[in-house]
Image (cartoon, rainbow over all chains, first blue to last red; front, side, top):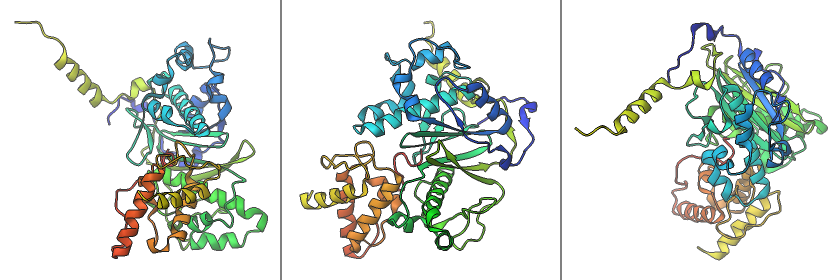
Length: 313
Length: 103
């Protein structure tokens, strides 16, 4: 994909480690300007939201005070009188077919959050954000390849990761989710991790497992491999100062290009992020207008010209 | 499709689910209708393997791409069982993932 980006917009290649700020809570009213600023300054941002804030009840009839950055058009898009199909786009039919109400609510809220967040950082209307999926299910913003996204939701929490430097994966899980002693514990741990966990005091073992699980999920999402890699075939050292991917025996398996972080969010949740830095610097100007693929635009213009009615000779 | 096999697979699905929901039938979808998440998926795979040792180790990737609903999962297990019994010992199909896992 080629873009028209001014040379001055390509920032020096700072370490990916420097871009990992604390996750920002976001509601439909923002803070969009702050999110844009963080993404501009730090190249990546992790957002979280409460499910209830993004369900249709919040949708205003009229723009409310403090709608920073959303603008009249975006707010109107959010109204449910017929615009939800447009907002959800290719997800609309799948959403309609869901019968599990909890799944349905999280699916809707997470897509709205993602579309509003992407719209805010790309300076586009949420309804114009084309959320698509790769064959393995990995979501991406069609036509905006310079921005990578990741999505996670569990219980009452929604999490979105956005980066303009490479690949990002996020995952969230309840800290209290019981993994210790379960079959899952045996399926997700490398021999090295099993050894490490055996040395941890009992009261912290489950939380450590949840942290490992979210790190592995975030990493597998970032690389877009789904379940092709068994979680017992790569690992992390949960207490390490600098987190990195480890081989099953505990030796390093990734380099400086990968960064990982884990946070406690909203008190009850463990959220992890995996970030791969391409090392090409980053693109500060990510407005959708700037990022339109020139090849795609050319193709569309050619197609429009081809199909345009011609005067009869 | 064998009703007995379908019922047994449905039992495994219920055991893996933390929601307490029971499949309404073979067309109950694991994610969209029953709410199976990634951790529940791993638990389900463990149960399927534990209760059907003849299957050997089930590739999670292959399973996930074929278990959209209870009927599809049952059909996959029946095929896998037949293959394992015949000595081939592998599942068929392309890779995939839990519908929301890669999201």
